[in-house]
Length: 221
Image 1 (cartoon, rainbow, N blue to C red):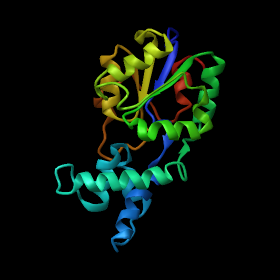
Image 2: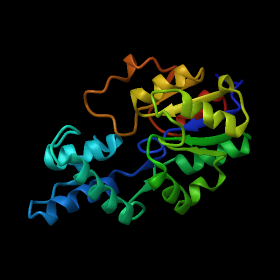
Image 3: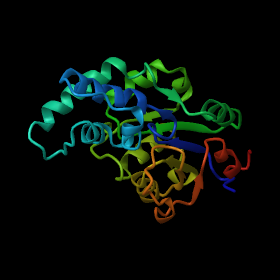
């Protein structure tokens, strides 16, 4: 379908890895530490893509405007730093997908809104990312997604023109960023999408329901 593609860029959480168990655990520890009952992982999963804002919203009904949010967010961050690779794993098919991209050969990389504070140690501890040509975090550039700058920075690092890249993500912001960067976009419908998410309105060039479906779009499935 896209024979011109020379590189594939991915969002991280909800697209390549399932980090919801560790994100949920970090927030749930805060509840338990305060004598509140633990919540099941399923309560947190659909908001995992929203990071601290989503996790504190589920655990305590907080919003960024709530009193004490900044302090609670930092406590959440400290908890997450201690457990971020204990339960996190690549989605089924991701390792095979990356191997196929390398064999093509196609360059690949990561563009996430996760801050370097977490992205760097996480990707360094997971062997999957050893072959990534670029890892761009939410604070690598002055802007985060949906601004296109992080995607353009990734393309610059791998020295491939944006129009020869595709971007895969499980959030509407990913598709907005990819389109603004001049890349083809793919909505990953297997990630943390809530029941109300309607990916057909995102404007993505394609949708996939599993990681390996991407190979078909690239004419390699």
